[in-house]
Image 1 (cartoon, rainbow, N blue to C red):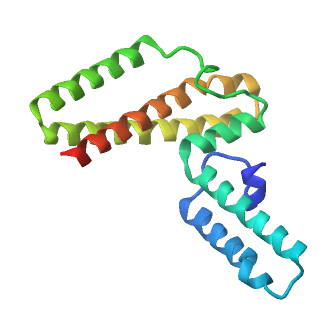
Image 2: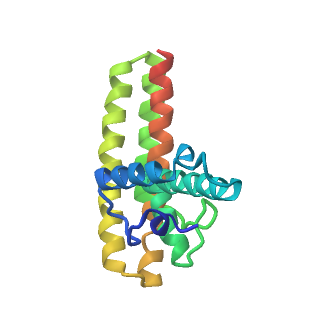
Length: 173
């Protein structure tokens, strides 16, 4: 399934959240199963199937990681944590420092430090999303340029996992 095609967008990373939500709402109204109560079973099943497809396409495109994965996949570039190039030493050092800071905050029960780490990772996520958007726009389907963006996808995945870990820790406290 091409989530861009399902929702009527040109494949691209920069999609305005409000446009995405509006298109999802429009299609959801048109395909709502209640609109097909008087129709035959086949037509109702088809509408339900399309509604499921629209919902899945919406989930993919509103998520920066999954949206990037969709673009790579549509470009014929296999994505997955095992296919990504190794992270740079600088990124690995930064990740290690973040992990150490998290362990220190956990050990001391310092929720303010955990929140500060969350703010930092949110800013990092924003930067990576912007870099991906610029990279996809300039790559214009060039496979070599697209492959060069794979490390950014790795950074984005790391940031998401770290953010989820921070949120879970804050919920526990």
